[in-house]
Image (cartoon, rainbow, N blue to C red; front, side, top):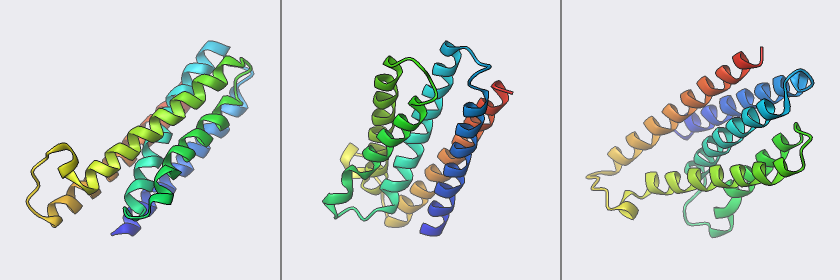
Length: 154
């Protein structure tokens, strides 16, 4: 079933690329404040969903890879920060990317081990069902947000 999570991650990465491309082509026609708001929305949602996918896909016992979702969030924030001309937006973008990455990392850790938050789960099958349903829900939510962002800048 990891193929479903990988497929959702590729789908969300494609959606994020389309939003980035749309924002890049329209950045001269959108005022700076609106562009900043659009970028922050895209950064937070994309970093959250991609970190969640990575955390669920990565093996939980390898500690070297634990900060990879955070790094991905920072890279997403840095990429979107280039769309605005205000230098302060770099700081905001990196912060939102890091927060999205950390939140996705935490949700992925709780999905893999519900005992971290004292959630009583009876079986491994229930943990897997909750993981796949939440990953699919977050992928659909990310797609809806990306479509709304593209609709707003149309």
